[in-house]
Image (cartoon, rainbow, N blue to C red; front, side, top):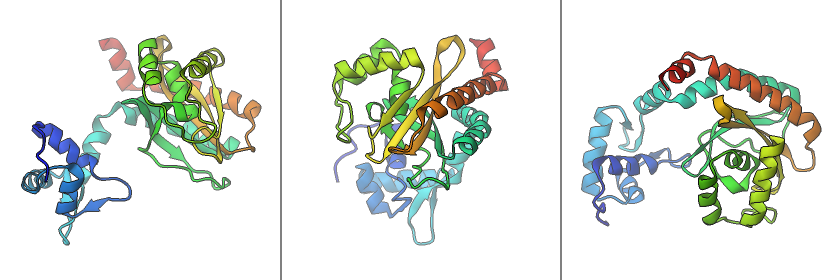
Length: 259
């Protein structure tokens, strides 16, 4: 087993927690150690401590899983929960109108992070999942979020690896800069097959105070079935309503006063 590489205790805990995913919700101790790239003895010690505090759980068969305490702490203290709760009623209204999948996402750690995804029973597409990540250049959501980020951040993203997810994914930095300028001008972006061949995404920004973008709202259609002229005005109206709802929350008001 490789050494832990001199990580701090917090770094090792993060590696343990990151070893779980939707296809591996519970893991034997040995598998968890391998996936976290930590010695078995270190994993055993840390798991015991995390189980003690409810951040991990140990089943009768000895497999380890994420504990409810971790969800409780994150839900109670995260500003993203305030955003999600404020947005959800308006997202449901939008889904009723357009009858397509609707999602809410933020920019985090160089990728799109989906906070909420509402599935439409009328759609033939997989709705995706909450807490999934996606490359910024590979979807309408990411390009909207990137368009309103700082020039320095855009330069960093565009200078990095830009994988070709489908034949239609744009990976040329010059062309991407043109797309970002277009997004800033029209306040939406429509991407057909950029990240998944069968999907067409339409995304609009949710603007916070002082023109900062706090999230993106996206509707996903089966490719070829989208109606941009119908969707965009409804989406922009909903995005404005979400922004107002977020600004009206006590957390947002307190944060504005403290800043």
